[in-house]
Amino acid sequence: MLDDDERDIQTTVREFAREHLRPTIAHSFESATLPREIAREFGRLGLLGMHLDGYGCAGTNAVSYGLACLELEAADSGFRSFVSVQGSLSMFSIHRYGSEEQKNEWLPRLAAGEAIGCFGLTEPDFGSNPAGMRTRARRDGTDWILTGTKMWITNGGSADIATVWAQTDDGVRGFLVPRGTPGFETRDIANKLSLRASITSELILDEVRLPASAQLPQANSLGAPLSCLNEARFGIVFGALGAARDSLETALEYARTREVFDRSLASFQLTQAKLADMTLELGKGMLLALRLGRLKDAGQLRPEQISLGKLNNVREAIGIARECRTILGASGITLEYSPLRHANNLESVLTYEGTSEMHQLSIGKALTGIGAFR
Ligand code: TGC
Ligand code: FAD
Image 1 (cartoon, rainbow, N blue to C red):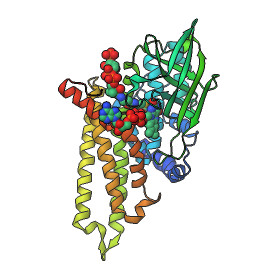
Image 2 (image 1 turned 90 degrees about the vertical axis):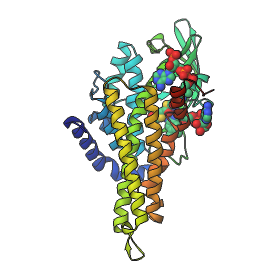
Image 3 (image 1 turned 180 degrees about the vertical axis):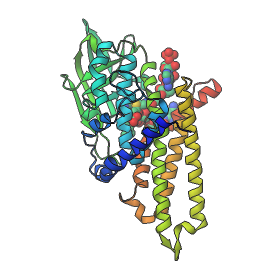
Image 4 (image 1 turned 30 degrees about the vertical axis):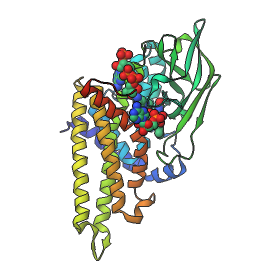
C-alpha cells in the first residue's frame, strides 16, 4: 500500500533508529536525558518539519511523515515527541502563521536541528481547556508584555525559540519568544515515570517585553493553536503503532525462546490467542492510519477523523504494550526489554495532544452536533 518513496523513507528511518537510537535508549530513559546532538542528526536526515514546503524543509507527503513517526516511536516515544514538537508544533506554527521575516529567520535553522523549538499552550490549571488560559499579552506602545506560566512543555528547557499562546484584549494570539529574553525562564520537570527520554518543562514569563514583530501575524484566535495540534496528533496516529509493533516483536521473540512447563511459551494456545489479537489490532490500526494519511494528502482530513485515529491507535497501542509485558513475565519489568518502557511512555501519549476523553467528546460532537465539553 506504499509507494517507493514512502517505503524508502520508512526503511531509512528504521535503519537510523536501529544504528543510532536503539543502542542507547535504555540509558537515556534511565538517566532521563535526551542528547542535544540528536536534533542535528534528525535535521541531517530531513526529519524536522519534513512535511512542510520550502525554508529547508523536505516537503514529503503526510504518509511519509507518519511512517517516520512510526519508526521513531518504535525506538522510543521520546524521539517521536521531539520530532512532533519541533516539526508539527513549533515549525508548523511559524510556517502557517508567521511573517516572511519570522519564517526566514527560524525555519531553516529549525529544519537543520541547529535550533530547537517548543510550543507552549498548556498551563498548570488549563490543559484540556486551553480557552481558559491565564497567560496574558498586553500592549505597551508597539511592544507586547507577556506574563504567565506554561506547563508540561516538551523541549521547553532546551528550546532556542518558544511559540507561546496568550490571551489579549482581542482573543488568543501567538508569540515567538527567544531563549535569553529578559523575564523568560524555563524549569525542567523531574521524576517523570513516563517519557523519560524527553525534556518536559515549565515556561515562566514575567513581564517579558517583545517587539511587535514577535507576534505571529496570521494567528487570530484559539483556532490557530488548535490547528497546529491536528498536525502533531496526525503523527501520533502512526507513531503509537511503532511502540505497539516493537512491543509485539519483542514478545513474539521472547515467547519463541522461553520454555515454560517443558515447552516453548509460544506453543500454548493462550499465548497464541494474545499474539493473534494484538496482531489484529495492530493491523487494523495501521489500515486506519494509512487511510487517514491518504485523506490528509488529498486535503480532506477533518479534525474529528484525527481524533478517531488518535483515540483508537493510542488506546490499542497501550493495551498491546501492557499485554506484551505479561508474556515477558518478570523479565518484562526491567529496561532490558521494551514493552513496559513503551507502555509507560504511552501513558503520556494517551494524555497529551488531547486526552482520550477530549477525543471521545470531539467525535461525540461530530456525531450529535452537540458540544459536551462544558
Ligand atoms: P471550540 O469553540 O470548539 O474551538 C475554538 C475555535 O477553534 C476551532 N477548532 C479547531 N480548528 C482546527 N483544528 C481543530 N482540531 C480545532 N478544534 C477547534 C473551532 O472551529 C473554533 O474556531 P472559530 O473560528 O469558530 O473560533 O473550542 P473549545 O474551547 O470548546 O475547545 C475545544 C477542545 C476541547 C476540543 C479543545 O480545547 C482541545 O482540543 N482541547 C485539548 C487541548 C490539547 O490537546 N492540548 C495539547 C497541547 S500540545 C501538546 O500536548 C503537545 S504534546 C507533545 C507531542 O505532540 O509530542
Ligand atoms: P486536565 O485537563 O486537568 O484533565 C484531567 C482529567 O480530566 C483527564 O482525564 C481529562 O480527560 C478529564 N477531563 C477534562 N475535561 C473533561 C471534560 N470536559 N469531560 C470529561 N473529562 C474531562 N502541552 C503543551 O502545550 N505543549 C507541549 O509540548 C506539551 N508536552 C507535554 C508532554 C508531556 C510528557 C505531557 C504529559 C503533557 C504535555 N503537554 C503539553 C500537556 C498536555 O497537552 C496536557 O497534559 C493535556 O492536554 C491534558 O491536560 P491536563 O494534564 O491539564 O489534564
